[in-house]
Length: 387
Image: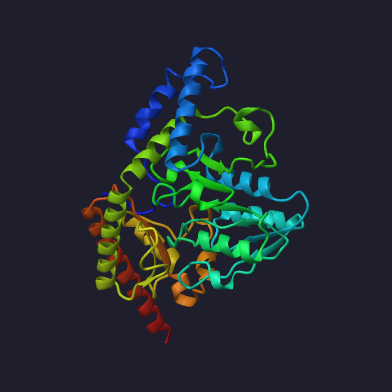
């Protein structure tokens, strides 16, 4: 039985071109980019070339790109680096990834006030209800949601901030779920910082980046080196940076082709499930979100039982964020979207890759239909025996 991977929002397979680009810097060009000899100079050139490539692709300046170990570190560096030294008000939503919400909780424990923005049933921030307090110092809003694919109205939120908020407030945008899957212009987005993570777009694990607007000085979390203007000191992982730049270039160079393919695969997949495993409920935008993300509820099934059955059937998916998938608690994202009861407790996330074949999608749908119908029959039989 071939395994079918439908959990690409958790992580993606490494692009072969990225591995080949990394290989020289894992072996013969292994120098420390801070060293002044030829090995160090080779490493430094490769590192800065990767930084410049990423900057061009995201419409940023090279000195605005700070390499990190991934999105979790980047989000922590941004959140704690931008938070005011004295307690103030922070604004976010329950749609955020745990690597943003947990720093928010820690900042709350340190005396900051927290405002959570309202969310529509489609998983989009309710801009009409946004009211910013004058004492707002930091806003953390993602670009696209990792569980539903809903794209957030950053421009409208910034407009609301300028109208009824504090124009000096910093805005952090977690774009880990969006990078490589939609166009991102740091120049035009208008936020203070942006997070990306390489393994979400077929790059290597262990590296991400934080884009930091020129002129913004973060309160450092780490000490002990001069690298990257002291904002994230430590020896930079040259091979990983090269791999990330290569994967991001591949993803964005073929973005139109990838989006069209993902949309076709998504529609084919959803149509098969609706035909043979109804009822199937879509959690999130039916149109207009990330085309490779599909959050579905299967009333009559328990998500944990379905996840286990699908794993046995050779289909990899998830019930939410990989960083919290060990928990059997309902998704905070879906709860923020006002999902309850059977819809909340039967929700599964399927996230696609443009590398998938049509045959993979058809076979995955067939296996999911079998598992869903089998679990529903067992559920109905159990209810009948109890009655």
